[in-house]
Every structure is written in C-alpha cells, then in structure tokens.
Length: 185
Image 1 (cartoon, rainbow, N blue to C red):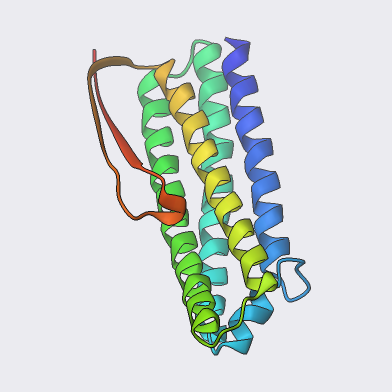
Image 2: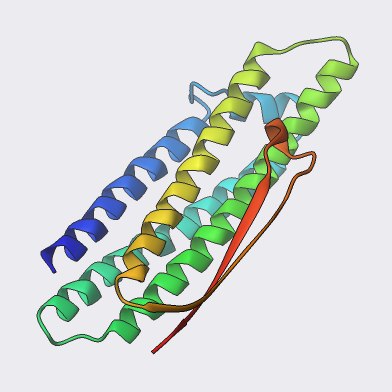
C-alpha cells in the first residue's frame, strides 16, 4: 500500500520536527532556558551527558526510520517481507524507549530544581515553563511510538491482548496504563 510509505514519511517528518525542537530547546540560546536552569543549579555535566545521549539516539533513530521506509517500499514492491518491517519497528521502539528514559532523567533534574526552589520559597516561572516543555516533548515521543504501533499493526495479526494499569501519584495525578500484545501467524 502506498499509504504505508506515506505513514512512514509522516513519522519521519514528525520525528525530524521533534529532533529540531529538542536540539533548539536544549541549546544555550533555547527559549526553554533548560540549559540555564541546569547550569545555575550545578547540573551542567548531567545536561551534557543527556545532550550527548540524545544526539546518539536521534541519529540512530534517523537511520532506522530511513531503513524502515526502504523496507516498507520493498514490501509494497513485492520484494520485501513483513518480518523485516516487524524487526525494524521493534528496534525503533526500543530506541524511542531509551530516548524516553533519557528524557525522564532530564525531567527528574528539572523537578529536583523546582523542589529546591519551592523549599526556598521561590516560585520560578522559568522552571515551570521548562517543566511544561519537557512534558510536551515526552508526549510527542509517545505519540511517535503510537504511530509506529499503528503501522506495525498493518503487518501483524494480534493473537492476545493484555491491558494493565494503576492509579498513583504520577505527574499531574494521571493514571499509568500498559498494553501488552502478543502477535502470531
């Protein structure tokens, strides 16, 4: 289906926009001031480690997404197999999960800074803006992952579904939900 290649193109465009926003937002000149917040609070080294890890992961993701587009095109042309596509989407999902883990680490540092400021009796609009931006990027990463799951579903037949969740003290008081899907022939 041409739709499948268009889906991959859409995911690639979305990821490119995400990557640009991350790089811009984490730069020293970034409007989010995450860089300044981290430096002011002696987390500069951690930010550099996070930036490096994000750069490595986004480069790998760019390569894997490009390969996925080739594989989906080959499947359309009758020369590729769904198994390659399944494998590639699995690898991309793994990399997105690693990116999310690194991103959560950054969110944790900014939350710690916020807590320290609150303990000092300071309410920082700059930190609040940074936290909102970080949450927005996390949602964006999750949305790209969801788009990949939707693409994957076109190449697989679900055999079993499991849904789990819990309500707890999460950010913004939201519930956590997990989905486990077993695919088969």
